[in-house]
Amino acid sequence: MQNIDNFNFAGKKAIVRVDFNVPLDENGKITDDTRIRGALPTLKKILADGGALIIMSHMGKPKGKVNPKMSLGQIADAVAEKLGAPVQFAPDCAKAADAAAALKPGEVLLLENLRFYPEEEGKPVGIEKTDPAYDEAKKEMKARQKEFAKTLASYADVYVNDAFGTAHRKHASTAVIADYFDADSKMLGYLMEKEVKAVDNILSNIKRPFTAIMGGSKVSTKIGIIENLMDKVDNLILCGGMTYTFAKAQGGNVGKSICEEDKLQLALDIIAKAKAKGVNLVLGTDCVAADDFSNDAHTQIVPANNIPDGWEGLDAGPETRKAFADAIRGAKTILWNGPAGVFEFDNFTAGSRAIADAIVEATANGAFSLVGGGDSVACVNKFGVADKVSYVSTGGGALLEAIEGKVLPGVAAIKGE
Image (cartoon, rainbow, N blue to C red; front, side):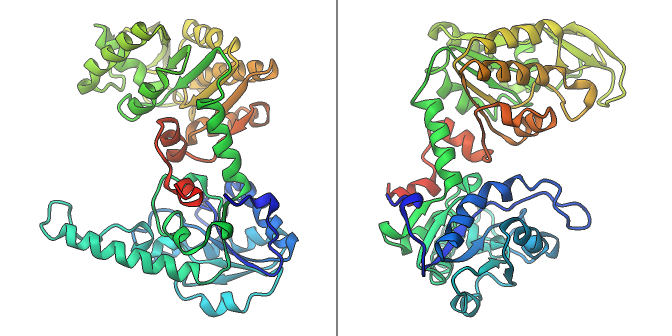
């Protein structure tokens, strides 16, 4: 596999898939430029070598239709500022051949939102899976997707994928396009290389003890990861909204807390599996309950399995925070995905902050810590500790699927797997 560090882009046109799906305010101004900053080492390397740069990305979910609110034209100036070079803009990503051909070494072209074309995602539009004609429509769309990818590939000599956040999607720009470049002309960008290495550290280069923290509202969305981690971790902390599904499964009262009634047996199965495998499963024993889903709600500390009617658990309680911290502090490998409470409300951040502080302490003592998933990343940013953990992943779904042990199409397409 070609390595970006060893490749000389001089005189080459490079098309780079980045993840510039950045949040914008009502005026189209970027509110968090983390993803743009993450791609800069790759983009600047190409320009420094004397290459011409074509940047492509998606933004939002326009579902194959042009939506001015999701136009990448809004961020062209911000990208230029960060790159330190003027950025030309192509208002139609599928009709940018002339603009790409005219690019000179050191020049930059930003393509319009890839997802303005349904061919990018490759899913039939306006037809349900239950429709008898769906299979034929899917076949036709896959053919169109290949043509779309071929068009994008025709703009450049080299393809670089630096968009880990979409690496789990077999889209035209993340996987299919790689078919139109030989092995020496396609590679992972610096950000992708770091992400793949970080996941490998978690799954294949484990230093023990290994503590994984899985949070979030639903156990159903994390079951694949939990099951894959069962064979790897020493300590498994399950927190956030899923706490109350486990509490109820064991006969507790959870008031009006979020609870997946149809996953109670699944929760019991996870408890049994952890016991059988010798995994220390850490669940919440107490919580901060509120009488309303609001930052200003009245609160009380109650057992997680005995929440009064009309109240709901919104954060981990003090006993639970201590148990979490104890399971984290002594770890040498740490994975955190998902908060311990409704951290968006300042009065319900204590559980997530306790996790973050313990991870920082363990990292300072030599642990490898990987934080991933939008909410967990937002936590470490909110608490100002992003630079005190080993690695903060830019990938949400991609990270989760990698941890589940799934092959990521965006990575496989480069490696030729």
